[in-house]
Length: 391
Image (tube, rainbow, N blue to C red; front, side, top):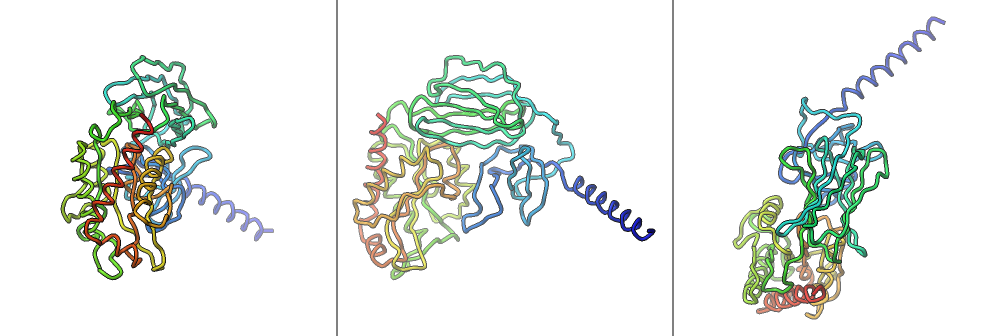
């Protein structure tokens, strides 16, 4: 009997110790750095895991587990995510209430943006999704319960058709923002300087939908020590070819009157956060990023375009249609692409993989004299097609 009691007491003590360890392993962190983000799970590939959302800095997250280089965080009762340990820092001063309430909303517009401002009690995490037909931005606010009884609309917004919310779970507040026109031109989410208001900024369409009134960003992929792929026969480096083609596109667009922003004009080492910061500061109407594909299978060939968010797919489809006029095989229009420059929701963007440097036919075509200008002409026509379809 004594041995049974001893075992029971030891078991109880072990459960208590485990409970105490669990309590100690749960703590609060806040996001840091220019582009902190959440991932859905622990999966990974050469571009990283599947990203759920980018976040503002100083967003409070509850850590419940440690998994390699990531923390598992509890967003709400039924939702978790993963964040890189390099993107957060622990802070003993952080606090979360048992119930975090939303307050009043204000819908306004000024200059290039409409805005929805939501009163909040803390800097809590969020996720946004673009929807089409009808065009909406849907934002989930995690750990938030509604106490919103006023949504004041000043009448100064021109692109927001209507706003409302639902409470699908006790601690998830879902914000709906329906747009007045089909095309998404970009949005951003951040807290104001007080941390007590979440600002959802919606970019309005340009006043005139024509090339000569556009601010167009061009990204020449790779650069510096990041050489990218190389040609099967010519051994040409992707970083040099992307810059050549980007400059050809820049020259053509400027000739047509567009204002062009280049992420690089030399063989410079420029990482993705630096490029993203440059682009966000420039606030372009759209972005085209130029790359050249490569595969272990030399038979793989063709041109392709890439997007991450469905609201920007229309741009990539029309550019691909024009690129196919150059005689390439159709490698496809690829969505949910986890490329860093496709991640920001701030502006429509299209990544163009001109063709495969690992394929002899594609390589011969892409290294021929004057072909950079042919590609530039097709991309420019694709952008014009896209603008005309909305006019």
